[in-house]
Length: 398
View 1 (tube, rainbow, N blue to C red):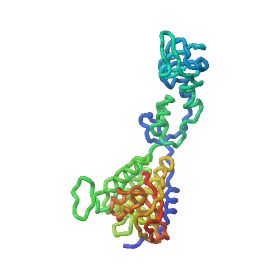
View 2 (cartoon, rainbow, N blue to C red; view 1 turned 180 degrees about the horizontal axis):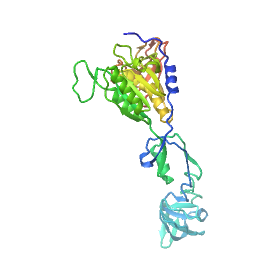
View 3 (cartoon, rainbow, N blue to C red; view 1 turned 30 degrees about the horizontal axis):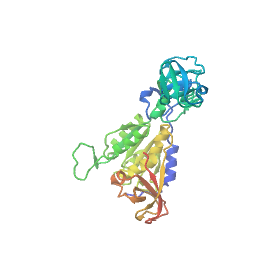
């Protein structure tokens, strides 16, 4: 075994990865019923006003506001208008028309008196309270104006934004194709779920955490079977992954043990190998025929930490998605925490009663993440976080 040398800083490693991943340019057109959580590939301009007419916001009577300037006004009922009807009666001073919520307000009217403030008597309606002009009326174009840019290229199609498309009668949307991300877990020590767990082995965790990360970040996972520590088989699987994917993510096999073969397989395409972070030091990154290959550590917490910091932003860039929003809260440490000088350390924490509790155990423990709401970064030159010291907790947003 050899120690990793010439470690790259976390910041430089991040820049190297981001400089070597490119947004996908291919666009596809899909029905909006399938467009949830997709990335819009064009701006959307409204072809008409929404609502396309003055619309009643309440059940009641459409009137001229000046006709009911005082209380207890008696108006002559001139008919009724229901939602969906194309009626536009001419209403004069002293007249009104019964109207339903969502119905078109006649052009000759400027307000709606709610039914609770009226009393119907034969062909007359008594209005007990005056109304101001445009009261209880959604004006034409109040929601969306014709020619307005309502959605921008690169926005995530959320349920409300899909609702905007539907309001404009748009059945199909142009979206960016999702990147295909090959996932390859390696090592003799892991076995697939559903199989017997022999002594000295562990179940494969990283395939499933990485698959979930890829799916949550606008990409499609292409999962390969576990690859044992066999140079020929590893090489074949990486080649297959590069053929069938836009990026390959490996876990395990990137440190400097006797069976860590990936650095040798990738050879001169490796941009860096080893990062000044804890956990996650034995990470590598390569570019093979302009396709990125990210080698993550095999231990679950190291793998997840680096996936969160380095992989998620790369996925979002490839998918043309907006940058991840991060929430930061300031709290005090519930206990002191020792660090490793010379490496940026990220400790996972939970927050209780305004204090941060360290839940990081070691690189191999998945509960170091499962029990956490976020993490605290400790700088390279810091060897101790003291109890009651104020820290910034970066809340996880996968």
